[in-house]
Length: 279
Image 1 (cartoon, rainbow, N blue to C red):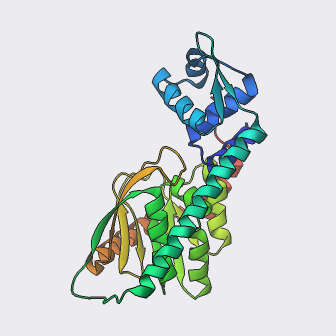
Image 2: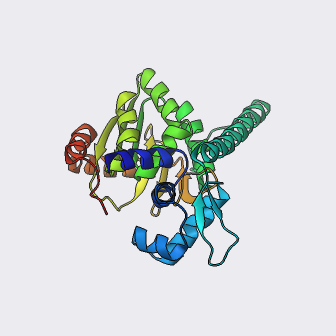
C-alpha cells in the first residue's frame, strides 16, 4: 500500500487529482472495467467516476471501448506520461512568453505607485495565481506568510513559486507557511523544508486561505478547492496591496501558527503510521 501511495503522489505531481490518480492506478493494476465496477471498487458514485474518466480521457490517460456497455482502459503508462509532459511543457512555454511580454510592456510604461489608494483584483485561474504570485515574490524583500490547501504545495513546486521563495530566503528573507499535511503530500512539504521554509501542519484546517508578502501584498480565498493540478483549473482569489488588510491577515497567521505543529514532526508521525489505511 505504501508503494501505491508513492505512485499516487507522483501522479498528483504530474497533474492528476488524488481521485483521478487512484482511478488510473486501479485500471493499470486490474485492467479495463465499466463504470459500474469502477464505482463499486473505488467505493464512490457513478457520477464521480464519469467525471474522473472524462478528465482522464481529455488528458490522454484513459481510452473508452466502442462496445456497449463501454469499458475503460488505462493508456500505457509511458505513452500517457509523455503526453502529459508535452502538455505541461507547452503551458510553461506559454507562461514564459507572457512573462516576457509583460516585462517588455512594463519598460514602456511610466508607472506611478501611490500609497494613498489600494488596488483590489480578482484572479480567476491557477495560471493567474501562479503568474501574480511569482511576480509579487520577485520584488519581495523581507517575508512571505501563507496558509494554503495541500494541493497548492504541489502547484508551488511544479510552476516555479518554490524557486522564487528560495531566492527570497537567499536574499535574507523569511518564509513561513501552514497547510494540512497528509501522507499524500509528504514530498511537497519536505521540499519546502529543504529549501529553508519554516512549515507547520494544522490538522483539518477549513478556514480562510491566504498569503501575505512584506505585510503589504496579500492573496485570500474562502474556497480554494482545486479538482486537479493544472494551470487552466479555475480558482477564485482576491489580490490586494491594501496594508490594513495585509496586517489583519498577518495577525491571523500568527494566531494559527501558535495552534499548529512543525511539519517535520507531522511527517515523522505519518511515516511511523506507514501511510493511509487500505480501503
